[in-house]
Image (cartoon, rainbow, N blue to C red; front, side):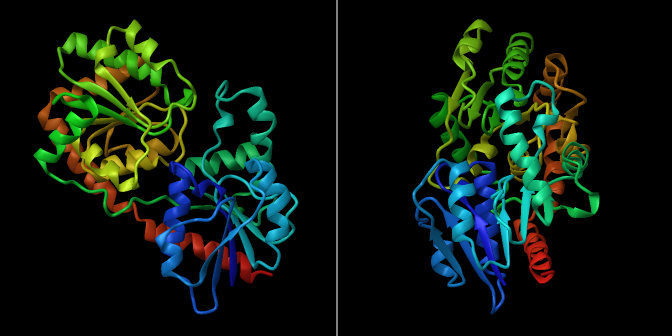
Length: 373
């Protein structure tokens, strides 16, 4: 079996989907059979140890490096001839590709009113829908995502496979007070406790609401905590201005989260008193799963995939609301007993997060499609 992967999102800063691709290919390199070959199509050459370890994994650079949409739709179809199956891990497949294909849809955010611009809904959202309809099978990361793909994209249920994402085994409790103190000094400039938000900032993740709830909490409960954002502010949210208006400019720190290795996040999760993700809409959240795997108590919203992962294992609120968010954060930060219970529950939930199992099940879907020819 020869599998191709449209891996343009593997390069650069690897956030959720980039890490998804990397972990899949890393594990596939150890699962491929004697007659299997994996071709990873990219804009630029990859310098990854996994490619050196596995002769069956080949990086094929397709040039010129056009914009992602033009590259995938104009150049990739010509380079992908002779494949048994093409995998689109990032919502799309080339719309002109005629061979068997599988696409991964990670969320259907356009179903949320006002979530995206009209331009996004007329371009990207349509391309995602067309890709899901053209692919032989669709892989989603949660049951709630499957239900949205069925309803919004009009895809039959029996064409959709639900496969949860995993967590790297490095994400575990460290129980190292000296390292935690070093992390606080490095990122905050002071040895104070902090609340952590990790991931790219966007409107659907309700960053302004989190700032509002945090400002109320530290003023009313007289807490010493800081709020640390780790991740790029691609939505250009006015973080500093909002923090200044709320009187917490000296308590809010943001770093773009560019690390030599994704595992550099492990001590940051461990040093945090609390992880918070107040999204209105979210597919399976890698950062939520990683925080729980490190034993960091979490506060999130009981919606869609967040509820599937976190209900009963984290502190969840029924909807994004500053009052509910403030109350939930206060309960966790002021009750050592609850804090310890959530730590234990999160670690218990973390047993369900396995990249090896994610890779195995995804490879089986690809093999099934390849064998149907």
